Image (cartoon, rainbow, N blue to C red):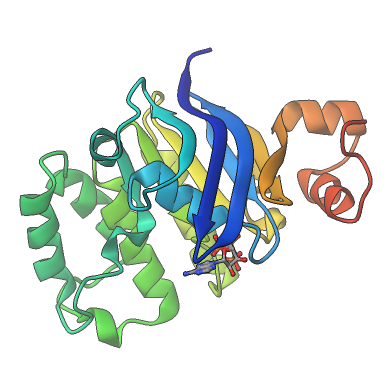
Amino acid sequence: MTKILSLTNLSYKRNLATILKDLNGSADTGSIVGLLGANGAGKTTLMRLISGAAKHYRGEIKVADHTKPLQRKQLVSFSHQLDGVDKHERMAKVVAFYDKLYPDFSESAFQRLAEFLDLDLHQRLSSLSKGNLMKFVIAITLARQVKLYLLDEPFDGIDSMSRKKIIASILQWKPTDATILISDHHVEDIENILDAVLIVKDKRIIVSEKADKIRETYGQSIEAYYEAIYTGGNEND
Ligand SMILES: Nc1ncnc2c1ncn2[C@@H]1O[C@H](COP(=O)(O)OP(=O)(O)OP(=O)(O)O)[C@@H](O)[C@H]1O
């Protein structure tokens, strides 16, 4: 199995505070990987580093054999890319902007996703509910044709029907060779679609394991296993 992502001895400080320290981990090409961890564990920071948005780290971040932040930016689509967009814009205009900005943006893929997620592209971002805004973020993130997708807490505050719809869109859309890293602290949301999990705790990845192996070895759901890790059990058993 080839690795799309390899993190080696990764350390990162922000305003003198150490956020990640000597972190190691990897993701197999074509897999859906859950990046799990409590609030403040460093999931968003790690995604910002992988995407090339955060710099000045120590160690190595490799995406498909590329280690430089600028090269990684072209290989990774990150759900936070929309953060700087003017919220008064209509969705259609943001899509046109994305189409110009990213040579890998597929308008047809976006249209398919937008239709599936029932998005009305004439609406302004500022008028969208939290769930519809997240659906738009998912559609625009997945419409780029790249090797690695980073979805940061895509189900935060989303009702269960929208959640199911978003999960269905991820599964329906995902090409076999695309890899998706999804961060979440509500494991039950994504448990059934995960091929592997990376658990972040104490500034590093303390578990990097296949989902089936966790279920078989520990006879537990991913959620139960993850909770046990956080309360002190299971680690390095
Ligand atoms: N600008 C900053 N300056 C200093 N510390 C920061 C800064 N931004 C984030 N941090 C710290 O980095 C740590 C990791 O934050 P991060 O947002 O990556 O965690 P997270 O796992 O994504 O959390 P959540 O699940 O709550 O979104 C936290 O302790 C946070 O306080």
